[in-house]
Structure formats: structure tokens, C-alpha cells
Image (cartoon, rainbow, N blue to C red; front, side):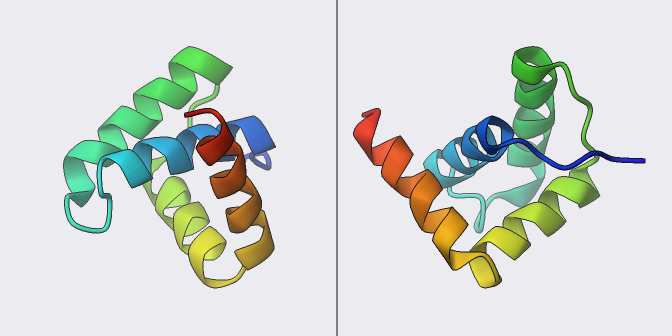
Length: 76
């Protein structure tokens, strides 16, 4: 059973997916996200779970997605 993603995990996922243009090159990028989350947070997430979370952020959780993007903009 998967646990809820922390804000830090979502931040990492969005950062990788936006930099790598996920919506165009899906397969290779998802492997990077899975490895990065495991390395940085010690969690294993399935590719399907991450795809769903990405979709939810973009389509349903607009405020959370905007918050993540603002944090990423400030860190650059």
C-alpha cells in the first residue's frame, strides 16, 4: 500500500518532469523520477502511481501545482 507523497517528493517529481519535458518523453523520464525519489527520500513509488500523481497535480490540484512551481522558480 502506497503512502501519501510528501511535499518534498512532489517538488522533486515536478522539477524532474518539467526540466525533462515529461509530456513529450515519458518513458525514460519516469525511470529518473523513480530512482531520484528512492535515492533522496528512501521511498519506492511505482511508475503508475507517479503518473497518476502528476496528472492529479496538473488537472485537479492547481493550487498545489502552482505552489510547487513557485518554490522551484525561487530555487533557480
